[in-house]
Length: 435
Ligand code: GUN
Ligand code: ZN
Image (cartoon, rainbow, N blue to C red; front, side):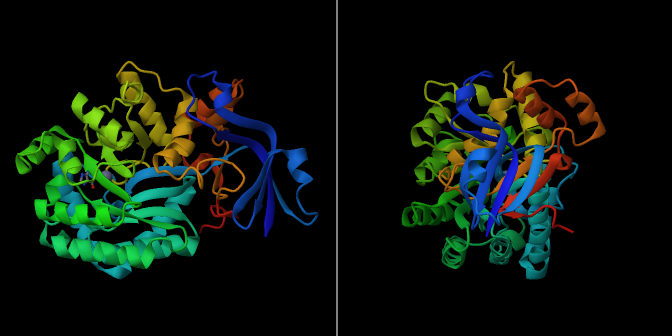
């Protein structure tokens, strides 16, 4: 099956150095994108791509809209769709009062399957085509998560959470169970369809040293898999963690001691790192995943994105919604809040950087840039189509917008799911077919 899309193409080649770093991306004002069997076959000026297409190619004209690689969300919690908008003073109160009780419900397959349907609908509605998710402690939740990803042919990363203390009984596994069930999830789902399984110890507070040993064994046995956990999100969390692991130098050192700090490691939040911890992250090539709406919502702190990125030993960075600590599924809303956090820190996050992070930046942070995050031929045809005049107020502002960065900034500042005209998953329109 071949499809030819026409519209304005935007794809990054590397991280932009400044607002006028036009070499960091390719932009085609009248672009064509040819899709064959779910893969991008060609991209470039419409007239040049059109001649490569067969005469009977199905053509979709998205002009004047922008065609971008699908957004990537580097950290969110599949069982927290009904936790969003929970009124709590801070992270630990929020976890204990709302989040842990809600996650207990995912022991029921029927519930996990129902929420999985809503989960993917919501991602697609917001232009997100790849996400990195925590399931609950129950294998049933991982089964529902990956089965639905496969049904929709989406490229997803996810893991059964491992946690064996400091949570309700219904959310605890044991070091053996966590190990065995993670192995089973890997056997059942990794590499099936476009699924990637991640080793997922929730965070140091909810894992005993024995469970961390079991996690270390998994990391040794499956060195290619992603590892995801939480790091240094909230001051009370950091203090409690230090008490639980008194021998560690600091929070980051706990994960390092168990072999969990490497280039496939995705550390959610990482807001309050010391210089030593940032050095350790940088040397290991580990990724700090910034979750701006969550950090503001839970009052966790201001992530020093720019400062971490420009260090002599830079820390790799990803961006994410962190549903349900986060308050929006939209990566546009997410980057709007990321921008405001940098403003409060006296830093500038320019719109080119924002769109780089949502696409190629997150793909690089996942070591998946050969498959997603660009419009390069040979990569997955996962796309989002953006309309910067989606609402009356946006259309009015668009009347005075003159440049591409201005348009991107408007989309980021005022846009949400209404600005997503269509989402393509493996070359197929996926948003317009939602109920
Ligand atoms: N730390 C451990 N678990 C969680 C979670 O579910 N959400 C957030 N924001 N932080 C966490
Ligand atoms: Zn999280």
